[in-house]
Length: 571
Image (cartoon, rainbow, N blue to C red; front, side, top):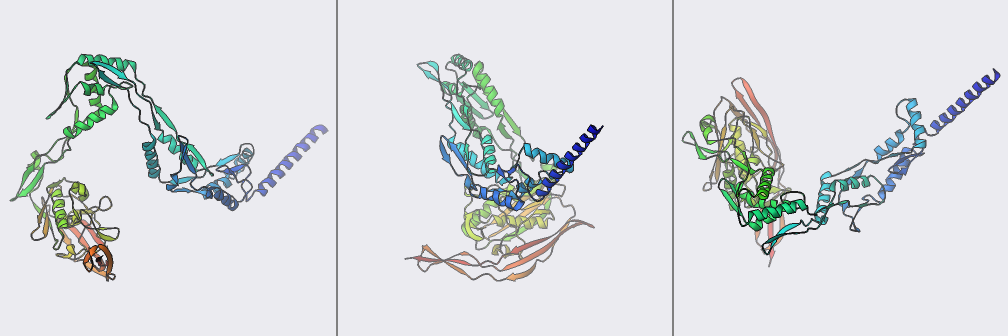
């Protein structure tokens, strides 16, 4: 009995000692990180949060952009061009929370666990994903080694196979993963760029089948057809198309063939084009059904025909896409009358600007907008660049008026904006110019303008009339004027536009004179024009009977703008 009591006493004393020791341990680390805890491999156990933060930051500060890539035993260190941010505070907070999460039993368990199994906290990082992917893509372009595929050649009327050569390709996903992992670690990190071998070993079965097929073809040609398109492939062209590794068709040669015929076969779908004339809507151009080559089906059918040699004609398979507006819809479109018109003047425009106004107006002329569809000026006008026919004229860019492709297009968007307002349509997107442009105030109060610049600024409105609407443009280059008419069916809506309110007017800064050695001495050339700054607003309200369909106040915040002259210095 006494022996049992002694055991109980011993056990109780042990419990008290252990409890006291553990309590003392917890008290000793009440403001410190528990032992065996590290951040990015840096031991921070026994430190307070501030000390740990300084230590970790010091390790990383010595090598902020610490990744060095190695390929072909050559080191590449261009990743410092990519901005990387590390959240040390979060990592330290996580390190401090080890052994402090959950209830008391959970905390004790976690504290004991770190003694035998050290805990490492990774440092979270953030970076520009597009920049990294772009860098790796460029690296692949620079260092990938394309395989040389085996091919068939005709030698002395005999077809023989020529062996290829393996290629090397960077494993982009694995490389990105390694880089990101390295960024979360201190010190210099050498990352060997992972590459995979692209085998170019020929497949004997495919080689034998190809040679047998070519013998069947003899001197016959394969004719590719699609509607009005026709192309003949001779023996040498067919020989090059046979794949000898994994696929029946050689990938590179197929892509070359595809590129040759796509521009002759494929077309974009185009809506029928209409114009409103003498109170009637007339067909101007019929619709065009779109066609694109069904590439997988073409590849498969071409392989079958080449191997079987059982047909000398192959119909190129295509996928059709149909326009939304067809000529047959002319009587069902609901385009009956003028529902809104906008006008503007552009006197004193330079020739390039006049040309661009005319071109942009022609691009949106005869646009049909379906019921419920949102009109986008940028989508309707298309690409605005020298490549699409535009000339240089003055545009607002980077806080300056400079020569750029497409200057004058905003004359058209402004006129469309005014037409949509007068038609009582719901305006869903509009942005004012940076400063007051004189062209838009030749026949209007300030504030009723709309700038466009793809993709940051667009003019959009909703066709909520229940019928199709037709947009027509007219440009009078003799009188320097243009108009935009919107035709549809009147539904009883009435639009009202208040007189613009002008406030907070500020004078333009002092005129700036810039020396220009390309101009003769004494010659002056104005490249920017003074404009008063102002805040302008107007109210737009659309009603139908007692119902308010749309109501909005449009605001324009125009900056004061200085005049700038180039001063010739050339002697």
